[in-house]
Structures are given as structure tokens and as C-alpha cells.
Length: 195
Image 1 (tube, helix red, strand yellow):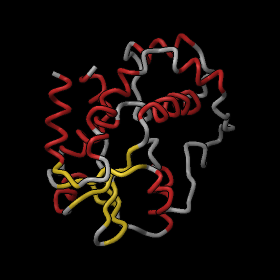
Image 2 (cartoon, one colour):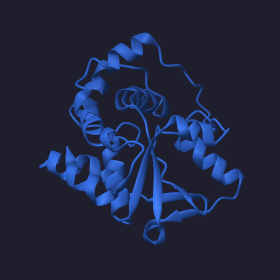
Image 3 (cartoon, rainbow, N blue to C red):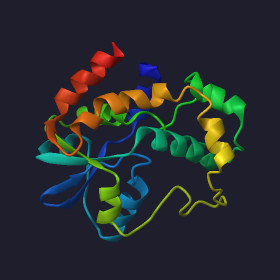
Image 4 (cartoon, rainbow, N blue to C red):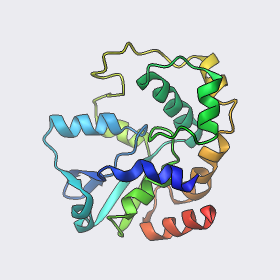
């Protein structure tokens, strides 16, 4: 599981510099599309990889893990032009399919930790929606027609063992919500859970 998920984080690590005191690390399914589109429209700097170490602190928006997992799996099906089905869901359940949209948020923090060892602030994703008026999503600019998440789709997604995708976030991240904490403190807890 750990090695499978870490393969997702070979791409650049990016932080958006909103102001001299607000640096945001955008996570997939946590307002990332809205935040990055807002940054592009307003010519905000994107700090990448080793440059991130020069920042003082970083804000990270966290979403309810179960809501994010369901939405992330739905987005995976959409982006791959797939109809919701149990065969693909079982591959997700067995970690044969992994994707940035539904990997636990803790792994995003591990990706950031490769380049940043300072303080972070975990905030609820609703604060990101208050910050930027843009409502981007995976459907923006995508030639495929967007299909809404139905109750039936939600039930199908929740039929797999979603807890292995959500429990780590509930256990490790939620106690630090709205607090300033050194990232290494959270990373140690993540590593303890994984060992």
C-alpha cells in the first residue's frame, strides 16, 4: 500500500504564494483546481520543489476524508471516461488502481515533507472556498461532459473498504486542525501508522 501510493508523488511539489504571509499547498479534491486557476488568473507565484524550503509556513486545506474519497473516486471515473462499475472499484480496493484524487491526504503531506520541514497550518477546505471566488473542477476545460455523482454511485463507491483510505486522515490530521505545527511531528505519526 505505502509503496503503491508514494509512486503518485513523483511530479513537482507546488505551493501557491497568495501573499507574503499566505502560502498554500493545494491538494487534489481540496480546492486545488479553484486555487490554481485563481493563481493563474492573478499571476500569483508558484513555488516548486527545493524553492519551497525558503518559506516560513504553509497553509494546507483539509477535506472530510470520506467526502473526499467518494468525490475523488467519482472524479477518477469521470477523467478516465468510465461508467461506474464494481470491477474497477475492486481494483481500487486492492490498490491495483491508485490516483491523486483519492489517495489519503496524509500522503500529500509526505510529498511536501520532501522539500519543507517548517510549520504548517491545517484548515478546513471551506476556508479555501471563502478565499477564492473561482469554482474550478476537473470538468473545467475537459471535453467530456460532466456527470453528477448520484446516490447510486455513492453507494457503489462506499461498498468497498473505504476506511483504509480515510481512517489515517481522521486519526492523524484532525487533531491538528486550525493549529500551527511542525510538519515533521505529523510525518512521524504517519510513519508510525504505516509501520
